[in-house]
Image 1 (tube, rainbow, N blue to C red):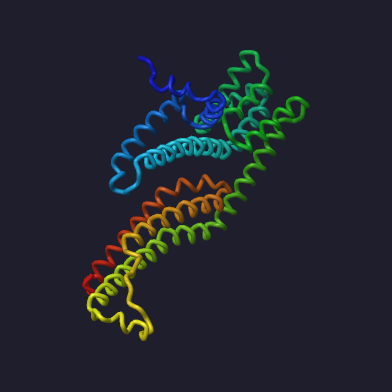
Image 2: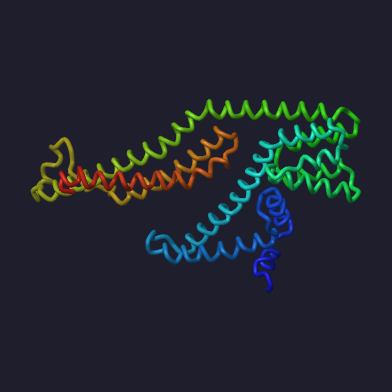
Amino acid sequence: MMDPYKPIGQLLPKGFRRKIKEKLSYSNLQINAEEFLGFALIFGTGIAFIAAFVLENVLQIPSYVLFLGVFIVFQLILFLWVSLSADSKGKFVEEVLPDALQLMSSNIRAGLTTDKALLMAARPEFGPLEYEIRRIGKETMAGRSLAEALGKMTDRIKSTNLERTVDLIVQSLKSGGKLADLLDQTASDLRDQQIIQKEISASVLMYVFFILIAIGLGAPALFALSSFLVTLLTQNMEMISKNMPSNMGEFSRAMPIAIMDVKIKAPFIQKYSIISLLASTFFGSIVAGLIMTGEEKQGLKYFPVMLVLSIGLFLLAGWILQKTLGGMLNL
């Protein structure tokens, strides 16, 4: 059966397909780049068409604007998913890399050759690193040099620590240094680095909590209260204006204030609040990711949860105010 995605993905520029192929090779997704691009285009178009058809009358926005917006958002979500998958794979490898280096060093000290010591260090708990180690073993048995096979490891794992470690091992192999001592020292340095990173993350965790609480609790409550107060003020002003005498305009210049129609209505405040919560949640998630990990995109994984929480609390707080204070004030 012919794959419907691949021919469509092949219509895209070759340079763009090459970049996507590189991103996919770093991630945990085992899929062809053309198939992935074809899937993104077909499903993105279908979802955007359905969303535009359903939401056009609800949001009072032109269908072509909704279609374009939903399509772009869908593509961004897919490519962000691939990027986060690549980062997750790299972080996992960095966590288990000291153990793998320590095991390889022990094998070398036990009398094994470098290639066999590396192959014997492959363990299922190492995940993607085990696959790369076994690949290196197969390539060395096929006749490729160990240094060249090690260099290909960084083509499938996005990790700065792994790249530097591979460079050290390759240089040690070329210079004939004591590889076991180098591996032990590198493993020790990587563990120290991980401990420092965890201490830094723990020290800035309070700032992240403050940001998330302000976005998830403080902002929805304040916006709900503002919406309720605008509703209260609008209805009171309308009631006062209706009960004013018809000839009140003759005395308006002598009055310290003027009774006028309120231009800002409650529905506008509600829409403005939701848009503001959307923007603050997005940027707050980015700041939280930057503080915790040093990468803005790492905070985007908190965005959907924080968005649902903030908007949900906004609607819940508005409903509570309406049922309690609104009932007493006859709103």
